[in-house]
Length: 624
Image (tube, rainbow, N blue to C red):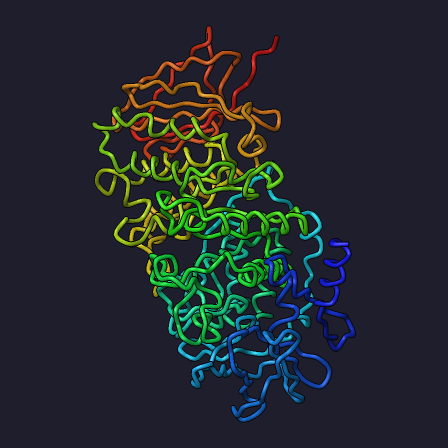
């Protein structure tokens, strides 16, 4: 009897409306309240229908709600309480694509405040904040071939170019930014030439402050108008897909902007945020989402679905997971079980909807099973940023060579824990700001010493197991820290040393993309083998990567002095030099002409190693 009662109750909570094309759209209020609704945006927000627009918002504590906009000369059009009294709705005839609107929320204390639509599909450029009516169904994608063959990349190369859309390139003499479709025109040839098969966009949801980089969001369903409209963004994604390039979106389900017109105190109550400041205020000066409320969970996971379904995004990089796993990101305060349950449910449902999407966790904690399926007690992510690898590696290269012997195992430690998760190796935007210096500048020593070390660092990164992410500008040796208000220093490519560095990165990326040994067995133990990982006084490291029927040997020398090194390797007849970081073409000091082979005799081979160098060899097996 109890089961029957529940079924009847849930059926009576279903609400619906019809789009102009006659397609029914439904939302189960029970699912919404308990945090299981995955497409709330199809019901809430502003939806164009035949003859006008249906507006709906969720504001349970409001005493009244009106819509003001272009269509009524910014005068109140009353919304009616709907269903259980917590939803408000109205139909306004004559409304069209592109018109602006706001909700005027009347509070229990007699005051009122104007808000953008939490589920709005577009917003004005800051400091204005009206929502924009968008027809989300008029753009027709032409990326069917991409969508049919895409995957989560488990056994494929994933080389991500992390991008801030407003500061990659700007047009000389023009104020503002490139539009989404203009960016596509510039990005496609650049990414293909440089060997990146994915981009990751720093958050492009609407945000009021440029220097938040998009991480303090005011319009979670609104692509920022800095770079154009929803259709222009769809066109950008569509064109990238048609050229074999995936798009990953930085997603921020942890916190939101404090601006009074946004989610903060939306209906006069703490509807989206925690009511207590000790957990409600984030370390970034924003408000933390209250993941214990089902309505908040439905809002956020529906947002994830929205970007995947309506914009054909290929994945999400989920920001600041540590601040969801632990209260305020502090493990001493314990696990936030409601937030963890939200992540598990959202990830599981997203993968059930489409197993080909990528879910990537930015997580600096040691919380277990982040990349295990939910069915196995995990959080359900596909990949996790390897923050330990990143910190240990960069600290090693900051260290003066005379002290690297003591720090030798900073570069071997990552493989001690590597197989516990599915890791991604990131050198991201966070590592080139706030006085940290750029990747190139982090290298120990003077200007001339930095380039050979950076080349060796990147060879180590791209031959190390795990998917790859590199922030814009790193690929040509950016020297100035990233500034969101300026484009990258492209003038550096007028200098031969930076040209050489760019040539090296192009070649390295191409090797990574074209050789399965560097990605096919990323998460299999038989895809990696240490050859030299003892505390070598010459600061030499060596390991093998296997896959696609080939074996490669990577050898590194992180001391400034040239040395002769005896490499011990079994089951090999010859080594063919595939890449040398000290090649003159890359800005080094040695010219390599034609094929260079090294014969292995009795399991040994002598190799002359330049200072600050890395070498990649193809291993030719002994014929038996």
